[in-house]
Length: 292
Image (tube, rainbow, N blue to C red; front, top):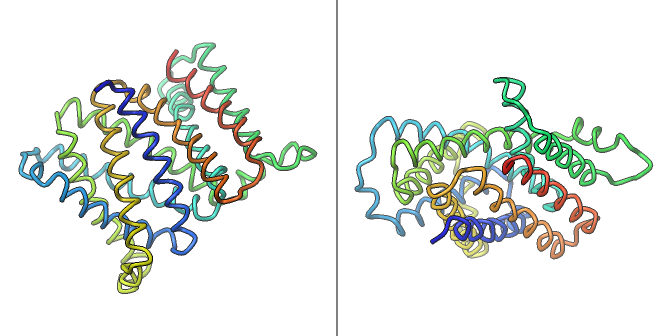
């Protein structure tokens, strides 16, 4: 199968996961949600790809994968905090800023040059973000104030940095260590479950209250989200194995548009037309940054 088909499947499943996550997060705190989902993801991954646990994976690759999973754990938690406390059509589009972060940090830290088209892409990303956060046209500095004051926007920015790093590590493990995608998925889900268990113990001082979410009301939702999550992560890994990370993420970012429009509609969120304009502008900017 071509890489862009895998990437498109990943985008559709990721959008479905985000919308269902928002639905459940109305009733559950972000950390508890992340922990329970990680357990469902782990169980599902083992059931689906059990044979791949027996495939040998070297200790260096396993250690790198664990370090990567720690970063992914915090990134996922931060995104769930943002989705729970912000409108989905306002939180998810900010994830499109990832290529802009990569290009800007590469310029500032290691001296990579920026082409005119890449600079244009950065301006489109900035313009789209400004439109996204504007709620009152009379207050021109309002979007900047929102970013400065809102801790949930800070969580999104932190997640952006972490997801940028984990995407690069994914490619490294798949290419240089030749870790099979299904083996990758299984061990990653095991590590996520371990990490969220430790994090929940540290933050909540226990996990006994988690049992309250293992009931009929929530189990069906968690199983559905786990199916979407395993699906989009596996599809992304297959795509990354076949094509550059930047190209894969360009297609995968369509999930933001899908989730924002559909989720925004069913959750009766505000300013959807303006947000759609902002998202399209940001996607165009991201495309220019990573493809030229």
